[in-house]
Amino acid sequence: MSNRKYKIAALAGDGIGPEVVREAMKVLRATENKFDFQLEITEAPVGWAGIDELGKALPDDTLKLCRSSDSILFGSVGLPERDPTIPKEERPERAALLALRKEFGLFANLRPVKLPKELSHACPLKAERQGEGIDMLVVRELTGGMYFGQPKTTETLDNGEIQAIDTMIYSSSEIERIAHVAFKSAQLRRKHLTSIDKANVLENGVLWREVVSKVSADYPEVTVEHMFVDNAAMQLLLKPTQFDVVLCENMFGDILSDEAAALAGSLGMLPSASLGVTSDEKTFGFYEPAGGTAPDIAGKDLANPIAQILSTAMMLRHSFGENEAADTIEKAVVFAITQGLRTGDIYNSDDPNAHQVGTTAMGDAIAEAVVA
Ligand code: IPM
Ligand code: MG
Image (tube, rainbow, N blue to C red; front, side, top):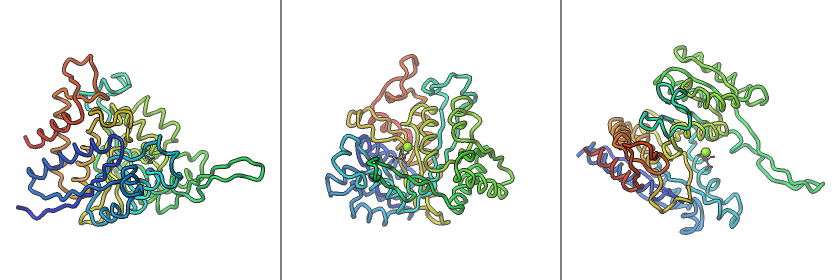
């Protein structure tokens, strides 16, 4: 028995979180036996589940567990219909998800968007726009910008008007460190980087462009292009194949990564890794699907578990260096799709090879393919 041992905090959260995290854990367990490492997976409540069980979206014990773990497998949090029942600062998106990103300094969010050719029908674009296939990596800055900038308030003015303020702040070092992550990722891919900004209007955009240009000197083999965010939103639809690595600040990355995910067939296919400062040893990471809680389909065995499962592959690769196990999960997902297995979000009745399955059956098939 090997001595490779990894501690994972599994925070399933709300909506479809518990059912897709269950499938992801099933797949992780399948790699454990096959690749001879040990996983110590401990589950803990977060989000509305945390509020209901322990009175807080991020209960103290859950945070403690995260601090003593090597990585976090996160489902999703937030049930908008319950929002009016508590103050906005206590709602799960802010009090749990954003709090965890800040707490662990998870500034680098990697969102790989890939459209397998078997799913080309699930892409809203015509086949000729899909070219040889859509394959890009959105690198989103995750702990700065408008999400966290102060002041962040809503005030009533003397004239009775209500005024909301969010503040966009970036320092050069914050831009620099995320730019390095993006350039390093590009070096391992097709060596093209598109940096997104709004330099024609925002001070932040001007600084973003300056710093990214400066960092690019360290990576002469990577071609860099600067693109305004509005144009990028359009180019994603017109010619998505031009993108390799897409570098964005926090808010632009939130928006463009959902758009990119739709090109890859479904938000249910988009995994993500959020990383902090890395050391050569283990890299603490936070792994979650980019989609939300989808309360309308929760508990009905309809959710697509693939984004959550692919997030575990990212965990094995980025936090544990278990590249072979990560590859195996990714191949198992492609295998299940090639076999015609489809959850509702990626199902097309015109495809004679496709048959619709539920969350559990998809997870079972992928776990079986891992073991095979
Ligand atoms: C995401 C989500 C979150 C974000 C929400 C749930 C706070 O949309 O991870 O993309 O805006 O970052
Ligand atoms: Mg989002």
